[in-house]
Amino acid sequence: MKKGLLIKNTFMNTAKFDELNQMFADAAMESGCVLDIKTGADVWINHAGNDYRKKDDYDFVIFWDKDVKLAEELALEGYRVMNSAEAIADCDDKARTYLKLKRHNISQPLTICSPLKYYADGIIDEEYINRACELTGFPMIIKECFGSFGQQVYLVHNREEMTETILNIGDKPYIIQKFIEGAAGHDKRLQVVGRQVVASMARENKNDFRANISNGGTMSPYTPDEEEINLAIKVCDILGLDFAGVDILKDSDGTLYVCEVNSNAHFKNLYDCTGVNVAKEIINYAVSDNI
Image: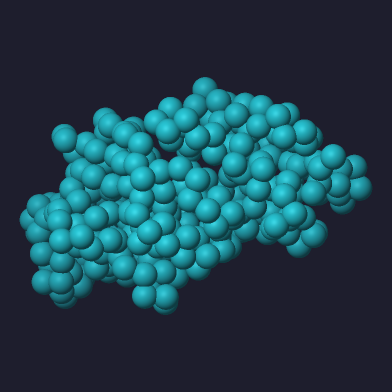
């Protein structure tokens, strides 16, 4: 019987997160494996005494958190960590995602990364602003590099709004992207586990440019075509992901763009929409001999 560890965030104790943890626990029980669920703090403090590995030897670790330092530490100790620290870090930072995928010519909206600021001094480089306006036009998208559930993403209609948004972001990193007008309020979420697309849904929001369900979007089951499937799998291969939710935009001319990649994509909405239990897919992948 295989034994696994699910690491959850120490402080995210809402019903939404508890429901996901329970889905993992139920899936593990159904598969016949043992799954311990611990917070990052539990693991850190036990591991600090150098006795954690002696007490519990796990066949796999499902890292359902973004504390990449802990993920890296466990990997150094020889644990099979899914997803890896590097993969989580690359997905968590939208600029890093963009750059990693750009190396492999993955289609993405035209993207400009913000210059590094050491403190929020209110200074804006006018030449940078001018060139960004020329490249993307208006409206444009500005995304803070760190954010979830469609938050910290802004649709900017003119130079004044652009300047105000950047000033409000302060010293936090961000990216500027060309607005894909043909995909406004629409995207496709493809859930990949072990190089297989296991579930997909289409999301639509008639009242917002973001399709996220948390922003009022609606969802429907979706059957991706071969191009979309291959794109989602290739993205996960490039980023070294065992599992992820890949968000794809489709312009009015049929061009596909990778919008975002979520290493710890919440899957309850996907389950409600499609009936596919992603927790079960991840557990089955974790206990298989093919990883």
